[in-house]
Image 1 (spheres, rainbow, N blue to C red):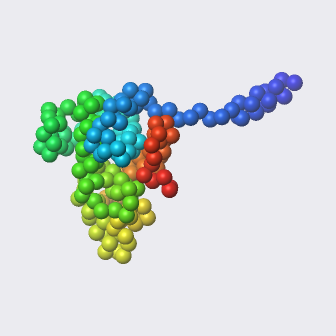
Image 2 (tube, rainbow, N blue to C red):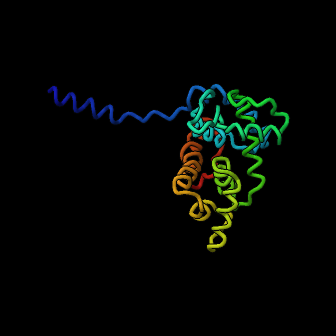
Image 3 (cartoon, one colour):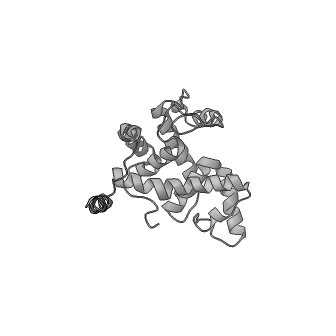
Length: 204
Protein backbone atom coordinates (compact mmCIF):
# COMPACT_ATOMS: atom_id res chain seq x y z
CA UNK A 1 0.00 0.00 0.00
CA UNK A 2 2.82 2.41 0.87
CA UNK A 3 4.54 1.66 -2.43
CA UNK A 4 1.28 2.19 -4.32
CA UNK A 5 0.69 5.54 -2.59
CA UNK A 6 4.26 6.63 -3.35
CA UNK A 7 3.83 5.64 -7.01
CA UNK A 8 0.57 7.57 -7.29
CA UNK A 9 2.12 10.61 -5.60
CA UNK A 10 5.07 10.62 -8.00
CA UNK A 11 2.71 10.14 -10.93
CA UNK A 12 0.58 13.11 -9.86
CA UNK A 13 3.62 15.32 -9.30
CA UNK A 14 5.01 14.33 -12.67
CA UNK A 15 1.77 15.35 -14.35
CA UNK A 16 1.79 18.85 -12.92
CA UNK A 17 2.29 21.58 -15.55
CA UNK A 18 5.80 23.05 -15.71
CA UNK A 19 6.16 26.44 -14.09
CA UNK A 20 6.42 29.16 -16.73
CA UNK A 21 9.76 30.92 -16.90
CA UNK A 22 9.75 34.26 -15.11
CA UNK A 23 12.21 37.13 -15.69
CA UNK A 24 14.41 38.06 -12.71
CA UNK A 25 12.98 40.56 -10.24
CA UNK A 26 15.29 43.31 -11.50
CA UNK A 27 14.05 42.72 -15.05
CA UNK A 28 10.49 43.32 -13.90
CA UNK A 29 11.67 46.36 -11.98
CA UNK A 30 13.25 47.95 -15.07
CA UNK A 31 10.76 46.72 -17.69
CA UNK A 32 8.88 49.99 -18.05
CA UNK A 33 12.05 52.08 -18.27
CA UNK A 34 13.64 49.72 -20.79
CA UNK A 35 10.49 49.81 -22.91
CA UNK A 36 10.54 53.62 -22.95
CA UNK A 37 14.24 53.72 -23.82
CA UNK A 38 13.95 51.20 -26.65
CA UNK A 39 10.97 52.99 -28.17
CA UNK A 40 12.72 56.35 -27.93
CA UNK A 41 15.83 54.96 -29.62
CA UNK A 42 14.30 52.57 -32.15
CA UNK A 43 10.72 53.73 -32.52
CA UNK A 44 7.68 51.59 -31.87
CA UNK A 45 9.21 48.75 -33.91
CA UNK A 46 12.06 48.42 -31.44
CA UNK A 47 12.38 45.01 -29.81
CA UNK A 48 12.21 45.29 -26.04
CA UNK A 49 12.52 41.50 -25.80
CA UNK A 50 15.87 41.45 -27.62
CA UNK A 51 17.28 44.20 -25.40
CA UNK A 52 15.99 42.44 -22.29
CA UNK A 53 17.54 39.18 -23.49
CA UNK A 54 20.82 40.99 -24.11
CA UNK A 55 20.88 42.33 -20.56
CA UNK A 56 20.03 38.83 -19.31
CA UNK A 57 23.08 37.49 -21.12
CA UNK A 58 25.39 40.39 -20.22
CA UNK A 59 24.76 40.76 -16.51
CA UNK A 60 21.65 38.78 -15.50
CA UNK A 61 20.21 42.21 -14.58
CA UNK A 62 22.84 42.91 -11.90
CA UNK A 63 23.66 46.63 -12.16
CA UNK A 64 26.78 46.51 -9.98
CA UNK A 65 28.56 43.53 -11.56
CA UNK A 66 32.11 43.60 -12.94
CA UNK A 67 33.42 41.02 -15.37
CA UNK A 68 36.88 39.45 -15.00
CA UNK A 69 38.09 41.53 -17.97
CA UNK A 70 36.75 44.82 -16.60
CA UNK A 71 33.32 45.20 -18.21
CA UNK A 72 30.95 47.11 -15.95
CA UNK A 73 27.31 47.26 -15.00
CA UNK A 74 24.04 46.11 -16.49
CA UNK A 75 25.19 46.39 -20.12
CA UNK A 76 28.79 45.29 -19.40
CA UNK A 77 30.45 48.24 -21.12
CA UNK A 78 34.23 48.32 -21.07
CA UNK A 79 35.55 51.67 -19.77
CA UNK A 80 36.94 52.48 -23.22
CA UNK A 81 33.54 51.82 -24.81
CA UNK A 82 31.81 53.99 -22.21
CA UNK A 83 34.22 56.84 -22.95
CA UNK A 84 33.67 56.41 -26.70
CA UNK A 85 29.86 56.27 -26.53
CA UNK A 86 29.61 59.64 -24.76
CA UNK A 87 31.74 61.16 -27.51
CA UNK A 88 29.27 59.88 -30.10
CA UNK A 89 26.21 60.75 -27.98
CA UNK A 90 27.12 63.70 -25.72
CA UNK A 91 23.70 63.61 -24.05
CA UNK A 92 24.84 60.39 -22.34
CA UNK A 93 27.41 62.31 -20.31
CA UNK A 94 28.52 61.75 -17.63
CA UNK A 95 29.61 58.13 -17.97
CA UNK A 96 27.71 56.01 -15.44
CA UNK A 97 27.91 52.29 -16.29
CA UNK A 98 26.58 51.25 -12.88
CA UNK A 99 23.44 53.32 -13.31
CA UNK A 100 20.76 51.03 -14.78
CA UNK A 101 19.14 53.90 -16.67
CA UNK A 102 22.44 55.00 -18.22
CA UNK A 103 23.41 51.42 -19.07
CA UNK A 104 20.11 50.71 -20.83
CA UNK A 105 20.29 53.97 -22.80
CA UNK A 106 23.90 53.35 -23.81
CA UNK A 107 23.19 49.76 -24.83
CA UNK A 108 20.18 50.73 -26.96
CA UNK A 109 22.20 53.49 -28.64
CA UNK A 110 25.19 51.24 -29.29
CA UNK A 111 22.97 48.49 -30.72
CA UNK A 112 21.33 51.03 -33.00
CA UNK A 113 24.70 52.47 -34.06
CA UNK A 114 25.90 48.99 -35.10
CA UNK A 115 22.56 48.10 -36.74
CA UNK A 116 22.71 51.15 -39.00
CA UNK A 117 26.09 50.06 -40.38
CA UNK A 118 25.08 46.56 -41.42
CA UNK A 119 23.32 45.06 -44.41
CA UNK A 120 21.38 41.86 -43.83
CA UNK A 121 18.68 39.75 -45.43
CA UNK A 122 16.09 40.34 -42.71
CA UNK A 123 15.68 41.60 -39.15
CA UNK A 124 16.75 38.27 -37.63
CA UNK A 125 20.03 38.18 -39.55
CA UNK A 126 20.65 41.87 -38.89
CA UNK A 127 20.05 41.47 -35.17
CA UNK A 128 22.42 38.50 -35.11
CA UNK A 129 25.17 40.57 -36.71
CA UNK A 130 24.41 43.53 -34.48
CA UNK A 131 24.80 41.39 -31.37
CA UNK A 132 27.96 39.82 -32.74
CA UNK A 133 29.28 43.35 -33.22
CA UNK A 134 28.29 44.40 -29.70
CA UNK A 135 30.14 41.42 -28.28
CA UNK A 136 33.24 41.43 -30.43
CA UNK A 137 33.36 44.62 -32.46
CA UNK A 138 31.74 45.74 -35.71
CA UNK A 139 35.00 45.37 -37.62
CA UNK A 140 34.99 41.63 -36.98
CA UNK A 141 31.46 41.33 -38.38
CA UNK A 142 32.50 43.10 -41.57
CA UNK A 143 35.52 40.80 -41.91
CA UNK A 144 33.35 37.73 -41.30
CA UNK A 145 30.89 38.93 -43.95
CA UNK A 146 33.75 39.33 -46.45
CA UNK A 147 35.04 35.83 -45.71
CA UNK A 148 31.55 34.43 -46.32
CA UNK A 149 31.25 36.38 -49.56
CA UNK A 150 34.70 35.26 -50.73
CA UNK A 151 33.66 31.65 -50.07
CA UNK A 152 30.51 32.04 -52.17
CA UNK A 153 28.10 32.21 -49.25
CA UNK A 154 25.62 34.99 -48.55
CA UNK A 155 27.17 37.87 -46.56
CA UNK A 156 23.68 39.11 -45.68
CA UNK A 157 22.77 35.92 -43.80
CA UNK A 158 24.22 35.15 -40.38
CA UNK A 159 22.81 31.74 -39.48
CA UNK A 160 24.38 29.04 -41.65
CA UNK A 161 26.51 31.54 -43.55
CA UNK A 162 28.46 34.42 -41.95
CA UNK A 163 28.46 32.63 -38.58
CA UNK A 164 30.57 29.88 -40.13
CA UNK A 165 33.41 32.19 -41.13
CA UNK A 166 35.94 34.07 -39.06
CA UNK A 167 39.65 34.56 -38.53
CA UNK A 168 39.14 34.90 -34.77
CA UNK A 169 40.73 32.54 -32.29
CA UNK A 170 38.65 29.42 -31.64
CA UNK A 171 37.68 30.55 -28.13
CA UNK A 172 36.61 33.97 -29.42
CA UNK A 173 34.50 32.42 -32.17
CA UNK A 174 32.76 30.09 -29.69
CA UNK A 175 32.09 32.94 -27.26
CA UNK A 176 30.78 35.25 -29.97
CA UNK A 177 28.51 32.73 -31.67
CA UNK A 178 27.18 31.46 -28.35
CA UNK A 179 26.45 35.06 -27.34
CA UNK A 180 24.25 35.56 -30.40
CA UNK A 181 22.48 32.21 -30.03
CA UNK A 182 21.74 32.65 -26.34
CA UNK A 183 20.21 36.09 -26.83
CA UNK A 184 18.17 35.49 -29.98
CA UNK A 185 17.26 31.82 -29.72
CA UNK A 186 17.08 31.21 -25.97
CA UNK A 187 16.32 34.38 -24.03
CA UNK A 188 14.39 36.51 -26.53
CA UNK A 189 11.54 33.96 -26.88
CA UNK A 190 11.30 33.82 -23.09
CA UNK A 191 10.94 37.59 -22.82
CA UNK A 192 8.41 37.60 -25.65
CA UNK A 193 6.42 35.01 -23.73
CA UNK A 194 6.66 36.97 -20.48
CA UNK A 195 6.32 40.54 -21.76
CA UNK A 196 4.78 40.28 -25.20
CA UNK A 197 6.01 41.50 -28.54
CA UNK A 198 7.58 39.39 -31.26
CA UNK A 199 10.94 37.77 -31.74
CA UNK A 200 12.80 38.88 -34.88
CA UNK A 201 13.82 35.23 -35.27
CA UNK A 202 10.33 33.81 -34.79
CA UNK A 203 10.88 31.32 -37.62
CA UNK A 204 13.60 29.47 -35.69
